[in-house]
Image (cartoon, rainbow, N blue to C red; front, side):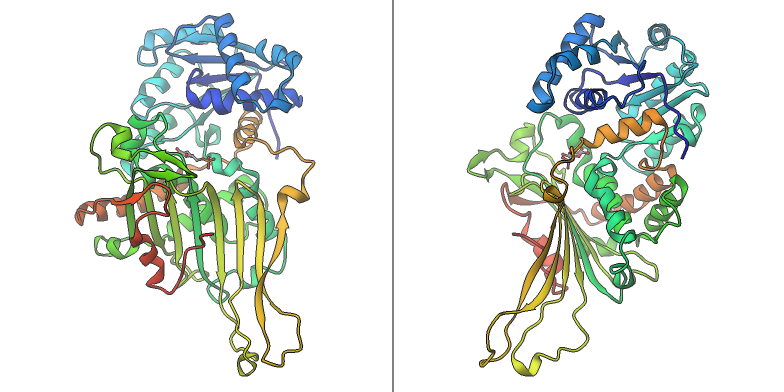
Length: 487
Ligand code: BG6
């Protein structure tokens, strides 16, 4: 893959939360390791008034707060800040965009734009960029979610962006794809020979994916209350995980090959019908409770008004193709759960016949657990015989075969997902970015679920903060004789 680094980066939302917590620390991290093009300049823009000096001071504070201690180095911070400049912009005012292009300067050497904006502003921002000459052949654009709130709005955004940028220059960000352990799913599946032969409906009974968070609304009330857990987490991150687990082996590690296979998975997701949503999904909203000994308020109370937005969702999904016929994918995500965890659990089928039956030995089907965060490990639960002379029968026990990626790669720096994604954007590698057809297939599936909720007048069930969601989510799997992996 040919990489063509740009000479300039333009960050929209440069004073926002994402910029402070992720983008600036990530760019600093890349700079510290000499991974940024040497002469790359970074222009920040947002509504707030700053000049270059005050923006650098702002960025310095963000780095002070969010960089890990061992990464802070005064000289490196100084040289990183020297790359930064700033232009205030009212994104709704087309007349102001020439100020931005004046500040950015000549883009003949390539410009990468990182755009995170409310869906309602896309039309104006894209129009402004075109007017100011910031959308030409040498410009690529990275788009941060939310890219719409349903299929129709996402199409609208995609159409708007497509007027100025061809698909090869659009980089839709799903930060889960920047996570090392998420990419490791590909290595595990396609770099080893022993899983793939059983990685199908013959070998696998069910798949569970959990992304649980302990945080609540944080400072994102206006966005989150309009979104809810299904749109915020399932429509993007969880479905990307589903795709990586379910996709066919791509012929090459290539932009087209990988995204083609993911898109096929999204198109194979079984659409939920209104009559299926009660059995196939559960929504919840947290009430006050305690997490790790700390008292936390309920969602309504944090929000300051009543709301029917779901902060928890569990879904039983199906992929209608040969490989996955009859294998449920149970997805679950929520705020204010007992622990922060992203995990995939693959439950294999039992052995066809147990030779130990007559001798008292009980077998558990194998399970593969891929823990994405906070720890990074892969664990295969296998049956072993307990030591002994077996006079009272053979005792078998499930034991973990552990691969701790944390320990195995202890000396390797763990990078923020955005480091990887920003570098790929700067260098022009689209492999870990989401293609238009993927996004639209994701929304098609999500919209059907939301329509089902509406048709059934489904409201979130309450759950106490610090628990694993409403009891109904347990029933969702137990009906099939399956238990969620909680420990
Ligand atoms: C974001 C969601 O996309 O992902 C947040 O908008 C969520 O609500 C976050 O907290 C989770 O990301 P991570 O990397 O902490 O698992």
